[in-house]
Length: 234
Image (cartoon, rainbow, N blue to C red; front, side, top):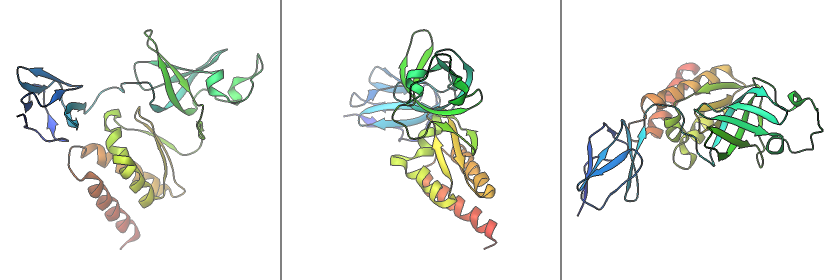
């Protein structure tokens, strides 16, 4: 019978023995040696049933089909827009996938998305030429206006969102901020109160610094309550 030697959400180092026996299956960031599962990289241990994975603590966004990201328009082509995806892949948002209405030939595409605009889109295809096909179809929010753009470490995005959205919804409730988190580590937020907007960004930093601890949602809630109390002079 196998045994788990390191608990999920604990930090592991390359070569750490995570589990012994054949009951556990090595996933991304881990490997098997004899009857042991070892860590391949620095990160947080994650388990999905019997499958053990290591989530890296740093690094570029690892793009995958189905992810919703926030990208920045860097160029305009005849056929659509080039998008910075915050990854090693270049993104292309075609006219067909980026606009719901008919676009006549030779139209001024800046009326839809201009260079410097941030766009919420989904990865629909990845090619061997390091290109990503993007789409805004089915999304109520496409181009982001006003608000603030901030960056977080892509590997920390699951912690910022929380299980079933528990973390991000708690932050929204306590700060009153509107927030969209891209899987690529680009975050948009908006708040009528600039102090609460800054506090929201500070909450993200708190999560990144403490991503390894258990009960993080409760800790972030306490942090926000304390900060808000100080701001109100309570």
